[in-house]
Length: 283
Ligand code: FAD
Image (cartoon, rainbow, N blue to C red; front, top):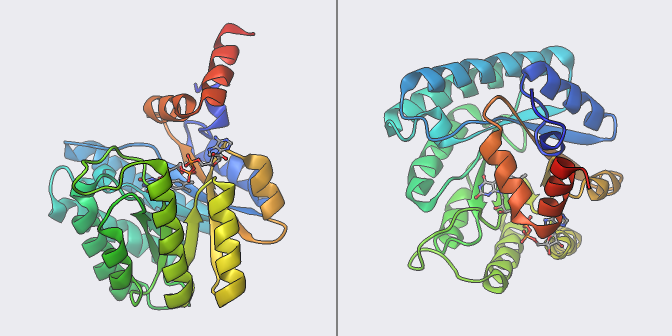
C-alpha cells in the first residue's frame, strides 16, 4: 500500500487506482499521461512485465473512453540491456497503443541515451505516427542539454509531438548548460523556435509560471497549438485553472516502484520536504 503521504505524487500501486485518478482529473478537464514507475532494468523479466502492463492499460484507457495517454522510459523498456531490446519492446507497445488510439510519449533520460531515444522515436513516428496532425507518438527534449537546439531542428519535420522540459538529470559541463538562469533562457529560446517552426504538437512540460507565460505569448504571436504538462501533486490548482483556457495534461505515475520517484519529488523543494516531514511526524 502506498502511504497517504506519497499519494500526493503517485496515484497508487495498481492500474485500477491510477485509472480512478485519471477519471477524477478528466472531470476537471485535465488529461492524463499515465506512467508505470520503473527504470534501469538490467534483466528482461521486468521489461517484459512492464511492457505487458502498458499494453493492457492502453486497452483499459480505450475501453473506458478516458482522456489519457502513456509515457514510457527507455531504460524501463530495456535500453540498459541493449538498443535492440528497447526498440523491439517500444514497438510492441506503440503497435498496441496505435491500434487502440492511445498516444505514447517517450520520456528522456540522461544524455547518454539521447541518440538512441530520438532515433527510436523518429523511426516509429514515421512508421506509425502519420495520421492526425499530432501523430501518435511524442518525445521529450531537455533545455539543459547543449545539443537540443540541433535536435529540435531535426524533430521539426517528424510527425508527432515534442515535450520541452528543463531537464532532470545532473549532466557533465561539456554537454549541459550550468545554472538555472542559463537553462531558463535556453528553454525560452527553444520554445520560440518551436512555436515559429513547428506546425503544432508542442508540449510545455514545466511548472514554471514564467515559462508557461512565455509559451502563451509565443502562441499569441505565432498561433501554433500547444499543451501544458505538469506532474501530479505539483501546482494542481494552477493545472485546473489553466485547463479552463488551455489544453492541460497531468503526468500520473503509479506502480509498486514508487519509492525513489516519491523521494525525488519530496526532496526537490523545501515546501515539499516540510510537507513530507509534517505528514510523517504529524506536525
Ligand atoms: P523549476 O525550474 O523547478 O521551478 C521554476 C518555478 O516553477 C519555481 O520557481 C516555482 O515558481 C514553480 N514551481 C516549480 N515546482 C513547483 C512546485 N513543486 N510547487 C510550486 N511551484 C513550483 N525531465 C527529464 O529530464 N525527462 C523527462 O522525460 C521529463 N518529463 C517530464 C514530464 C512532465 C509532465 C514534467 C512537468 C516534467 C518532466 N521532467 C522531465 C522534469 C523537468 O525536466 C524538470 O526537472 C522539472 O519539471 C522542474 O522544472 P520546472 O520547469 O517545472 O520548474
